[in-house]
Structures are given as C-alpha cells and as structure tokens.
Length: 233
Image (tube, rainbow, N blue to C red; front, side, top):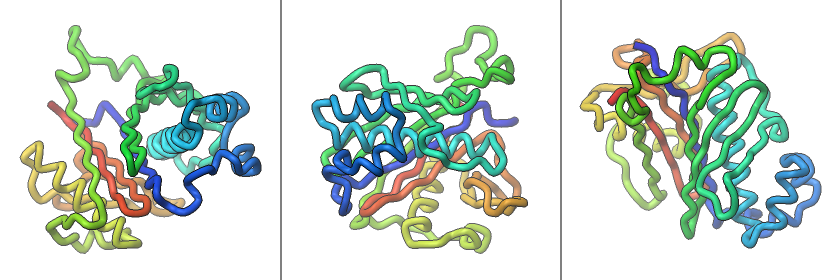
C-alpha cells in the first residue's frame, strides 16, 4: 500500500536572535518573498508573525516538493503562499504544478506549520478517496513539538544514526518514532535513503524496508523539535 499523502512541517523559534523585526531587512525580504507576499506581511497587524508564518509555509512546501521532484532546488520565491485571509490558520502554496495546503499554529514562543500535498495536475485522479469516503476516513495525521528541556526516551538504531547530524536531528527522529506508536507500529525507524544526489528526505522504515503507507516530516529550530507522521486510518 503506497501512501496517498505527502506531508511537510516546519517550526520557527520566535526567541531566536534575528527573528524579531526581520521584516525591516529589505534585502532579505526581496530575496525570500514575492511582491504580493511582502505587501501582505508589511500590511499585517503583526508583521513579524506574518513573515515567519510565510517562511514556515515555504519550508513546509519545499519538504513536500523534495519528495516529488528529484534534486529540487529551494528557491524561496518560487514557492508562493496564498493565505485564506488575515488572521488565517490555513493557506495554499503553489510551486510549479503542485498545490500544497498548509495550516499554522502560532504560540507565544513558536510558529509551527504542517502541510500536505493536495493534488497535481498530472496525477490527482489517483489520489481522491474512493466511493465518497472523506479524507479523515482513510488517513490519520499526528504531530508533536518538544522543548529542549523535555526528555525524549529512546536510542537511535545504526541505520538512523547514519544520517543524523545534530542532537536536534536525533530528538526529532525519536519524537517521530513516538508518534508511530499511535498506529501500534513498534520497531519503526526514521531513516534517510542515499540517492544519486545525496541523502533523500526522511522515511518510515521497518526492518530495513520503507513503510510506504506512511509519510514523515521532521523539523527543528532553536529550542524546539517537531515531527509529523501521516498514515492509514
């Protein structure tokens, strides 16, 4: 069974140096955001929050596009965010022929974004639910956020350690494994497979074989790690 959904997520620690007031950095704004995005950010009641919501949506969408486009390059302005209004908890991100839906959670200390692949012009016919089913009837999505002061039990396997580059990277994998227990899947690993261009995105595996009914996304910034996993109902 192949997964019917691809997901991404991104978290921004609002206490990190350089986060507050970044909308005043003209060079950064011109490089990362389209003219319509810049106008929306600067006109919003909370421009710093609007900026990092838009940033997190682009990061989230890129993580999905990287699963569908071999060797895709992250050109920030190529991922255009169209929120449903302000204040908005949902938006769509357009990249080439991909239409990616995202939603945000804004807390005092962080912005967290989760996205899923909505459709492609070429292949969407294979993805909708069958027989009038609703999406929630055939998939479940769980996510979690952990502060650096919170412990996460467990140890990575040798296969998982191969692509780990930092303590937050390790903690994000342990969090994703904890989320996998919601499906009563024990012994799952969060690994990255080596491709011709380098390490691919994280995948869920068991005994060395990818579990294609699931998709996973990891992120970390500052004091926080986050993970999201989607799988069958």
